[in-house]
Amino acid sequence: MSGFSPDWLRLRAPLDAAARSKPLLQRFARSLPRPARLIDLGAGTGATLRAVAPAIGGEQTWTLIDNDPALLGAVEREMSSCGWGALRTSDGMEFSSTQCHVQAKLYEANLARSIEDLTLTQADAIVASALLDLVSEAWSWRLAQHCAAFRRPLYLALSFDGRLSWTPDDPRDDLVRCALLEHQRRDKGFGSALGPDAARVMGEHLDRLGFDVAGAESDWHIRPQDGEMQHAFLAGIHAAACEQAPQFVDDIEAWAALRRRQIEKGVLNVTVGHQDLLAYPPPFSRA
Ligand SMILES: C[S@@+](CC[C@H](N)C(=O)[O-])C[C@H]1O[C@@H](n2cnc3c(N)ncnc32)[C@H](O)[C@@H]1O
Image 1 (cartoon, rainbow, N blue to C red):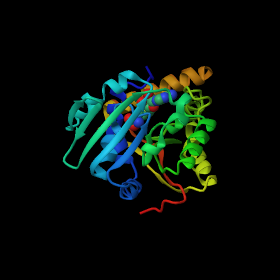
Image 2 (tube, rainbow, N blue to C red):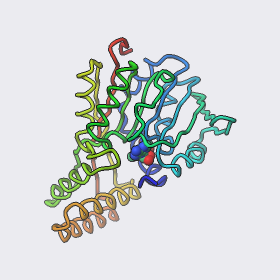
Image 3 (spheres, protein in one colour):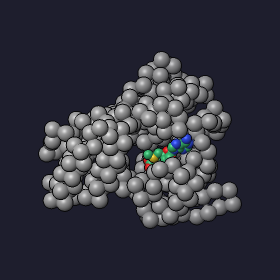
Image 4 (cartoon, protein in one colour):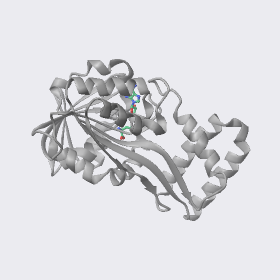
C-alpha cells in the first residue's frame, strides 16, 4: 500500500493530461522506434500509458512497474473505464484504443532497491509521471547513470516544482506552502525526497552525463468546477501542513476552513507548478 489511492490517481488524471506539455510529448513520441518498447516507473493504475501510448500510436510494448499491488491490480479496471479494450493474455495484458495496441506486463517491485536491475536492453525509453518528486537525490543520480550506461532516453513528466498559488489569495498561503514544501522533502521510501527540486536536480544530473535535456512547465489549473479534486487536494495539503508545522495548527485550520467555504461557493482557483523533462543520451537526436 503506497498511500496513493486509485481514487486520487483517477481524480488527478484529467488534470495531468491537460497539464502535460504537448510539444514535449509529441517530440518524445516522434523520436521512438516502432514498435516502441517502454518502461513506466511508478506506473500506478496506468495513467501514463493512457496519456502517452495514443501519442505514439500503433503497436507498442509497455512494462508497468510499481510497488503497490493494489494499484497494479486496478490497471485493468481503469483502462476499461477509460474506454480502452482490455484483455488478459498468458503473460500479461493487451490494451487497445483507436490509436494504438499495447502489450503490457505489470511488475510489482520496489524501485528504491532495484533500479540497476532494470533490463534496459529490452526498452527504447524510460517514462515516469509524478514519481521524481518522491525520490532522493542519490536515487535520481543512480537512475540517470543507469540510463546513461544503456544510452536510453527518459521522459519524466509532472514533477511538482514548489509553485502553488490560490485565487483569491490569503495571507496564510505562504505559511501553508512552506510547510508543504518541507513535508515534500520527507523520506518517501527512497531517502530524503527531492520534492520541489526534483526536475531541476534530475535535469542537472542528466546534463552532466551528456544528455540533451529539454524541460517545460506542466502546471495544474484546478478550477471551481473541479470541486471534488479541489476538496481532495486541499485535504492532502491541510494534513501535510498540520503534520509539518503543528505550532501553526490554528492558522492552518482557519485557512483550510476558509478554502473549503470558497470551494463550496465555487470561487476558488488553484495553480500547482509542475515540470516535464525529456532527455536524450548523445547518440539520439531529437526529432
Ligand atoms: C503520484 S503516484 C503516480 C502514479 C502514476 N504514474 C500516475 O501518473 O498516475 C506515484 C506512484 O509511484 C509509486 N511508487 C512510490 N514509491 C515506489 C517504489 N519505491 N517503488 C515502486 N513504485 C513506487 C506509487 O505506488 C505510485 O503509484
